[in-house]
Image (tube, rainbow, N blue to C red):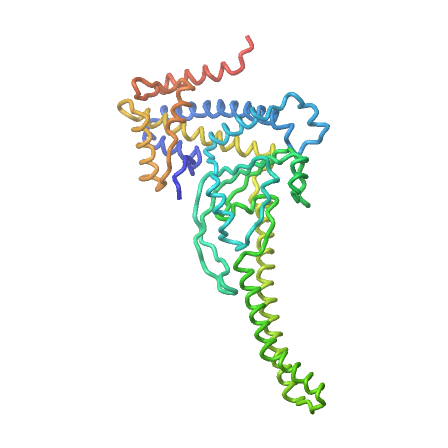
Length: 407
């Protein structure tokens, strides 16, 4: 699995871990908590502004709004501003974009359902997938009829799919079939899911249609063709030809042998038909499993749709930004000398690995930039240090007091 920026621990836990180093100094512990409490409120205020900006610039493309509601946002919703803001929130939330190669691999492979899914990408003017966090789990999958095998499946903890639907004229020109999928041409759909298999990413597309895999087709048609021809040529056809010739020449028909051959052929054909039915039934069962996976995703795994997805993203963004700020401030505060970004990055990543058995790629540059914007981080000749805790409290209090300045 790749190392990503996502920190798989909540901010309260990380703060307690940092406070443990000076737990006997009750005043310092209390001041630390006050500092990060105000910082958290400040970040929440920033998230509120981002949410308002997102909603206003998304409204014209929101499939959940009526045409009457959208009219109020004519000239106010700007697609470029919406996309730029969305990407900013995704970056702060430590989501990364899935590249085309990874998506193509997911379309070819399938860990759980064993189905090929057809997706008409002409339906979308643009589509993007963003993921965050990975983990592995043991699952039992059916292999070769009734044999079940335990395999290790890789999952994404979070997946956001961005679908910018094509306009009506383009859909008509390309003869795109989207029957049964409620959508509005030209709209933008956003969906967030949890715990999605890496090799089953295509299941979250709303227009994914199950089709027989090449293996399913071969197992169905090869025995049907060769078995059918073999049985007909060896048993049924010779018996029928013999009976017809005897009838034509007026000879006595050997009913016993003819009936025996016919019965044997028909029994064999019945067995072949049962086998073919079983193979087709396997395919139907796969479709049922796919439908169940889809319903589970929509009901149990779905965390937000369209404008409702903003709240999930912004909550993640606040959480990640807060965790990064706690770590860079506390590590620099505990350091006896100023540190370069590389030294700080190395220390934090080593701490995660040694103390929490977690290998991650800490985004130190982004974290230091946020610390500097708060007025708590100071860079001198490439070395970083923080203002003292007492000064930090004064600085962050002044920053918060200046948010609503009506004088």
